[in-house]
Length: 483
Image (tube, rainbow, N blue to C red; front, side, top):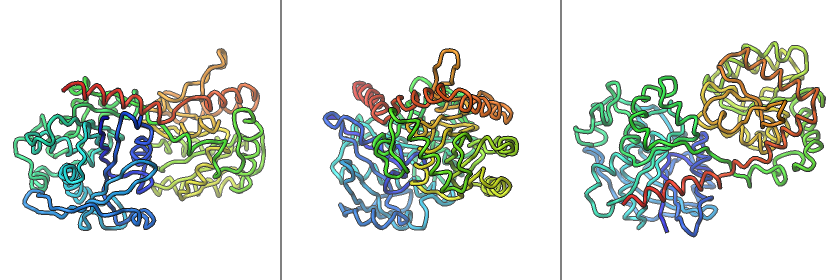
């Protein structure tokens, strides 16, 4: 049986700020338990909900050297849905009301975490064949493994996989400060290793020192090797292209299931899709203060409100889209004040046509996925995206820009061949987005049978974690055969 350790800064249900937590908390459950022992290790944050902190039990403690410092490391553990989770405890680093702080604090915090993880392995008596690290916060794990620990017998032949969930976040900080913090030898702080544009780059370290690098869709794996998508590391990614691959994320098909999801108004399946969608849509329109009208195309948005998500395009076209009353929007999320206020403004300007919910509620998100006719994701870039997978599961037709995982998971509708699962546009352009929405509106209003068939094709797609897990299993098997 192969032993796999996921190293991550967050995982559902214990702590979540974004899609990373969905991956690291959900994916481990889908590996073949007869062949893989997959466990997860993450920080024990003070801001975790008490219901989860009370689940943890103390395993051991020790001290780790971090540069010239000697820091306490507590190890706690919990079993959740058949998976063993370990937690690194240190109140100096993991106190506070949020998991991430200022970058200068986080580079020390996650240097400590990375080294503590490796030191913890003999203590918990778990020797992984593969250490699977996620995002820049764990980028130093492969660095420490290949330098400080490579000559220690316990760590011999351990393989490292590094997954990039979002290239935009790299963990960059001043070279001299990081050298002091980490205690790593001076020879590592060069342009061919950790140094990048005069700073230290944790994500680059993870890429350089790992045996395999993955990202969360095939298209994004290509995009990060280009100047537009590489965020300054495209040259490094091209250099490491032989060990780079893309594996699309999945979703939990048990949690997102229109036949059993008690968060939605009415359960439905492919067999009674039209009636189920009609009833859920009317219930959501009423609850959100929208005009209850079956003929209106109701578009959902569940998102962080940031530039990346394409809201500049939405802002530019909102008057035109809402003006004649054929389209409604229901929006859920928080983010940049500019976009929060934009949605509030249009909700006041077009009462009954736009519902702006500047908050986050998992239950409301499920209702939106299940009740809307279409789901809009006009992202500037999108490593994978999960919302389009959730909308497909509920027969809510995605309208997306062709980037990253959106391009890989949404097949554009072809009205002549009667194929596709959604609508897409290629360029980051507001008028192109508008034209695509209006094309979708035409199919929705004037070719309802084709629309329903389109939605049902989306429901029949398999973007469960099972498919993703099988691809990771193949990667682990290949790495383990190399020694």
